[in-house]
Image 1 (cartoon, rainbow, N blue to C red):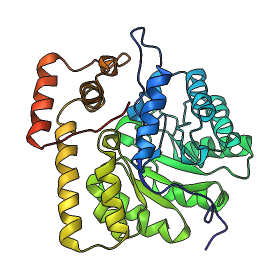
Image 2 (image 1 turned 135 degrees about the vertical axis):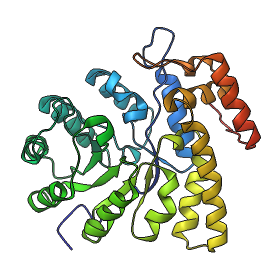
Image 3 (image 1 turned 180 degrees about the vertical axis):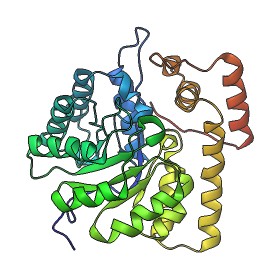
Image 4 (image 1 turned 45 degrees about the horizontal axis):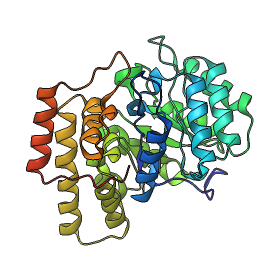
Length: 314
C-alpha cells in the first residue's frame, strides 16, 4: 500500500454538508449553527462544513474562517470536521486549506476551480498541485470534490491517478456528487485498495458502495435524517442480515426522494424551521429562495405520510 494518510484519524460513515443558518439580515447565525452541529454529532455523523448544501459559494472566506473558529472555541472536535476549501482562486483555496489543517481538521473537501469551462486536465492538476505545494502541511488530507453538473470541471480517474502518484500522502479520497453509480464504483475499484476513500453524495448508494469498499456518504439529507442514515452505515459495517439492511436502506431512500422532489436546500431548511420552531431556518442567501407556503405545506404533508420526525434539541 502506498505511503499515505492511511492510519490517520480519518472520517468515515455518514457526513453532513452542514446547512448554514442565517438571521433576518442574512448574516450567519452562529448559535444556531453550533446547535445544529452539536445535534448532528450527537447522531453520530461527521461535519463536512461549507459544502454545496452549506451555501458555501455564498459565504466569504472570512465568514468560513470565523464560523470554523467559533466551532473550535465552543468545543467541537476538530477531527470531526471536513471543511470545504475549494475556490476559483488558488490563493483563497490555500488560505482556507491552511487554516483548516493548522487548526486540526481531519481533512478538507476541495472543489476544482469552477469558473472557466473546458479546461485541460493539466490545468486542474496544476491547481491542486499549487495548493498542496503552497500549504505544505504534513497532515494535509484532501478529498477531491467531483460535482461536474455544477462545476463543469470533472475529477477524472486519470487525474486521480496523477495526483496520487505525485502526492500520495495529501490525496485522501473523493466525494462523488455526479449521481453516476458507475463512476463511484470505478473510483472505489480503481483506487480503494490504495487507501483512497470514496464517499458517494447520497445515502441511496450506501449499500452498493460499502459492499465494495466505499467508506460512507457525504449527503445533503444527513442534515435532517442523521440517526437513520448513521444507523444504516452501522448495520452495513456490521454485516447485519440483508433483509434488515434492505429495510433500512428503503426507509432512508424514501426520505431522500421526498426532500429532493423540492428545491433541496430550501426544503431541508423549511423542515428544520418546522421541527425546531426556529422560523429563521427558512432563510437562504440569494440567488436561492425559500420554499413558499404551499410548497412547505406539501413537504410537511409528505413527511407526515412517512411518519418522519426530527427529534431536535436546537
